[in-house]
Image 1: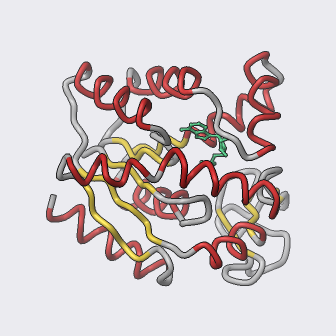
Image 2: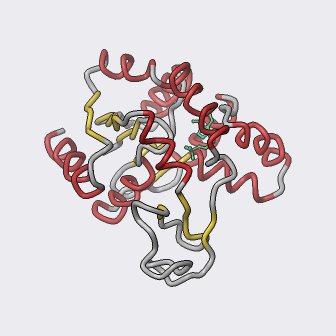
Length: 215
Ligand code: AMP
């Protein structure tokens, strides 16, 4: 089963993707994570994307499609969760073609609906474990012991360079201009399901589970 988690920054796509990886053995493909890895690796591509990402703009379709294409060749267990990809209509077309080339298709696109006011608080309070990637939040979900990861015990927590209010405004603008048309695109293909992304984490994951169990 291959699915897309679609929604603005801070909608909870990464959190829900990680739960699905644990519960269903699916493979999470986050272009944001791949780009952050490239950014910290010091490669030429990393330098090129770093500034664009820090400003909250989208990197080119060519780069992210290339990243996804490489991953689709690897073994993937129980299917892919596309998290943060596609973000443009060109990426959506490319994904359809890539999956078809691998004899696969998309089973569901899950739109996580949230309102903008909630996103600012969610995104600006967010931090993750540098070791295992577990996601926390200053107010909504702090680590049980400050500075120590509940999941793996590591003691280095990191905040994203683009989780600031200014970068978030730009990321939201990009979302509404370039990514939100995908809602209509996948609705027309009969693949769109919507869940309330503002609900508590367990309730959102139950809603997603319900969609996946009936598709
Ligand atoms: P994310 O972690 O998904 O919020 O992505 C962080 C940043 O990486 C975005 O603000 C973009 O600059 C870049 N990015 C991630 N995925 C894509 C994509 N599919 N297309 C273009 N840029 C992307």
